[in-house]
Length: 113
Length: 110
Image (cartoon, rainbow over all chains, first blue to last red):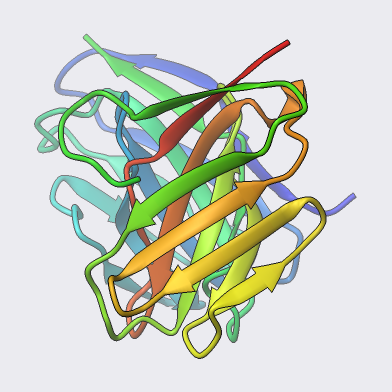
C-alpha cells in the first residue's frame, strides 16, 4: 500500500526546544516538499528537495532545516529560531516531471507552548 | 477564490446542485493550474489539473475552466454530494513549485 506517512499526528513541545517531524514515502518519488498551514490559510512552502542530498529553500525557510539522505525520507526540524512554530505541517511528494501533482501525507499538528 | 485575511470564503450548496468555486491568480507564466481538495484534519488531495494552453478540462463530475485573459480559474462540481464538503485550493505551477491560494470552504446542505 503506497503512500506518505507523517508521524506523529500531534506533537507538543516547550518553547526553545528543537523538534523533528518525520516524513516517509514509498511511492518512489524523486521530489519531496514541506508546507506549513495556519488556520484559514493556504499552504506555504518551507523547503523542497528534487533529488537526494539536495534541497532548496521555499518561501518561509527561516527557522527550519531539512535533510535528504535517502530518497524515501525528508525530515523537517523546527528550530528554536522559528518565531511562531505552532502550525499544521504537511509533507508531500511528486514525480520529477509532474511537480504540480503532489501526494500529501496526513500532516502533523505541532503545538509549542 | 483567493482572498486576504484569516477568513476563508465559504460556499454553501444544496445537495444535488452544482457548485462553482472561483480563483484568481497573478502569475501569467504558470504552466499548470491545479485544484486540490482538503478534508478536515487531512492533507490535500489532487483533483484535476489544466495546462495553460487549454481553457477547459473535464473529469469525473468536475470541470475546470481557465480564462487567461482575466487570470481566472474555476472548478465546477456537478451534483454536489455531502462527501464534497471540504476546503478547495487552487494552485499554479511554473518554474517554481506550487503556489497555493488561500482556499474556499464548500459546505453541502443535505
